[in-house]
Length: 487
Image (cartoon, rainbow, N blue to C red):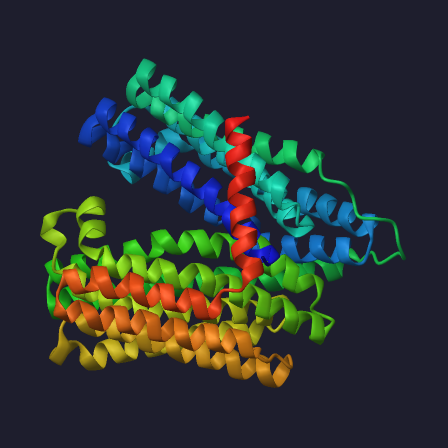
């Protein structure tokens, strides 16, 4: 079993725990605060997110890259100088800025948030963004050091400690307690990441590869500017797409599309979370060795497909239940949109597995250009087909955009990074697509046909594509976790 698949299973377990904790916390919050309190709390949470997004200037990915370089080049001084630079040039100025924003809250928070009172708890919640900002630095350092077990343990500790603090605060002090709990959660986030980093071994000593502060800043800013631009592009593109759907198809159909988009985003967290934690620093570590990079990319691609294909088949077969559980019966018409959009998710996952090498190898402009191409195709196809196809145009555009992105990254990495998909992965890729397509086609005969055909096709795919060592790896992992739980 590949290292990526092991990391995916590990972080998948952590993600499930985090989701359960989040559901429990949301349930308690809703019961205690009611709709009005939930709306007020959401306003402060969104404001925290807005303030936090403006700090560190998007340099987290750059921190991951430099820390990975420090461990790859065996340079403790590079690690120390980078973290010192980040603390002095980014963390402390960000903290002072946040404290200034929090201190000025009495003069503007009622107008911005839309409700009166609770000023002091709001100030504390805003000031705590400084804690989460410092925690993001440690989280990036842990990712760059590739200490995945320590990172997973810190995430588990964060989830358990947060809920143990948040729930009593809400039960004791209602909305004020919920606002204070936002600050407490940020403190827990910082503490758990600092705890994990303190237990991370430093890079082995080797040749002195320390970069000058100017070079480090340029590297951090290069990744940061790309991250910020793509984030803004994504938000603007999503806003424009929804606006066109509301105008062209109606607000109800736009809501159906949003439900489908939300479903695909939730399950994608499992794979993409592992990709961000494992794939990028691992790609970065071998970016100078094209043969090693090609081998690693094939391993990651294989792991992504082994997780994605069963997930897509499961969502197709159980689509009605998934929509009812996550939303309501009024969203039943989203079912056929989901059937279309899952084709796009297949190419999105495969494309991201390959495309991560472009960013890790420093081709930032090409990475940004391909993302711009994605949005041009998505918005262009949706606009062209909206009049004749209605809301389905958005889902079809999503498939087209992800297919074009997949082809683009495949062509680019083939010509610029000497990447070639190996024969086993080609079989896994195309038989996986055939399995998803066959399951989708069977649904036209009714849900019962899908319950029979989907698992049958998935079984055939598994027998033809999954190797014996991968089956054994999954069994051994399950046994070890079950043994730990019993112990």
